[in-house]
Image (cartoon, rainbow over all chains, first blue to last red; front, top):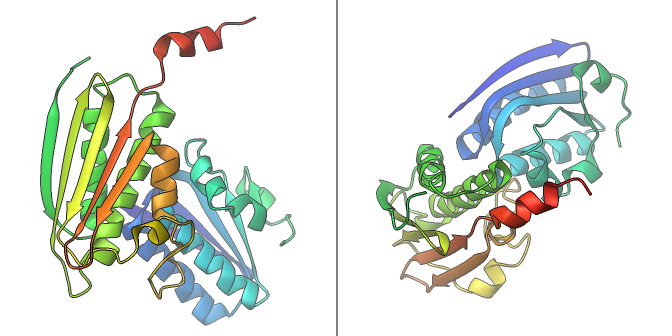
Length: 115
Length: 152
């Protein structure tokens, strides 16, 4: 229950490593962390590591999509890392894989191009 | 397997209670033969139903949410009821991406997720008279599951 966030800036990128549940409460914490960076940096690449996220619902997906829209408007990009197999159907139902790359390891996130 | 067990919960429409509700639902659902993916689907559906209560039912603040769950021969039954403002047009509200929220992060996919992840979904609501969401899910037949997994 709950969501812990580790934020690691690397150059023009921000890596957010999430641990816990990306539900209504988690979505609010994620949004705050991402928007704080966006407000300061303006743009860049947001890498969201979902490897330790046990649960995602539509409020969590909405928070991801909201940050994606904001980044796209500011010519930035967003990459998701390693969602658990049981989380993927929720992401797929919301069309997330069509919008942003999903990679297996953080190291790959630096290499993929924005869509 | 326990047949005929049930659980009732009543709680205020606060974000932190969304997790409480889905974990309670998962605990009761575990008394039936659901697969792990099915258990995840139940958790998402309950999370959506209760999130709707938190986000939409009580625009002036918070109010009561009641959740009743029952497991039996016909599967898991979950009812989520609020006494909030109700839904003006239920059919419209169930359309994918429809939302009354002004927050761009609100996708309007709650009912879509509930419909896709549960076997049955009924929504009863009227303006000023609250909303009741009724959902049912039955474990996929364990014998056909086993047969499907046998190498050909």
